[in-house]
Length: 408
Image (tube, rainbow, N blue to C red):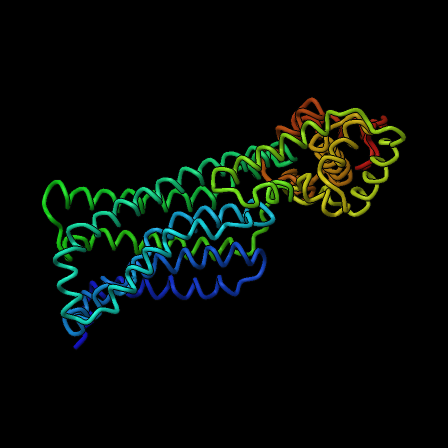
């Protein structure tokens, strides 16, 4: 008979919450492919709790045939983490992305085979073979797999943030706290698993109850991943160009990141090539500038070169070349100049309006990025500029501002 006491109930509540959020994420809108990968990752974490939820309630004593139930999909955690972040950062996964999950499938197949054995054979196999040879190998493989994919994910994060910075994203856009949080959470998961396994192997064997603290910490991680994952489910993430994803088709995990680097390098090289014969880059850039100004895309925080290229129906390289060759200014500099000009015009129109509110409404993501960009373009702080130009305005002097988008 099952009896849910404080230990099993505590873990069970965390598992139930994680399962509910996993279900919601599976049906969430936005980047559905990414959300389903996060849903699968959260479900794998929930399953990892189940032997302890059931064990502390007495399920294994009541039903010993539950031995080898495939709850621990340890080799799926790392690949799902990496694939989720890759899908957030790129428009599509590599063609053969499922190969990342092949080791987890093999491990699952073994567990299902052992689970299907008659109870007496199952006990004999566990005592003679599994506990001595296979279980330590599974634990080691799980730790190595998660460490490997954490490394890949950290590298991907670094390249992604560099890409955002080089394609129009400010300091705020480059922070991406959710990506950092999920990496820290899975890093803590790895540290806890490895620490308890080493203590059991080198100090003294840990029994079921000795590991409660480990799984209590896992519960906290699941609660954190569930809450933050759901909070960021509808958030749009800037995505690296389609070339980075297509170039990675058929590649392994390291090649997928390398393909992103190659695509960015190709774009940069293309932008440095002289204008194609007969192409009027000034006319092209002027038309694009007018559309960006008219539709006020510059007011979108974190607007990137990819976003603009997608809306214009072209590629990032062409937009970058148009701005540089046709307007003599980089995409990022132009967008920031229009935002500064818009803030200046509004400060003059309403001398009492809070400067930060004007800045955020004109597309700046934070006070820090606004102050830095304003100083670069205006030569003074926003408050100093407002004070000086308010005085000039009172003296009926020409303040010399231009409307957003009219400056080359």
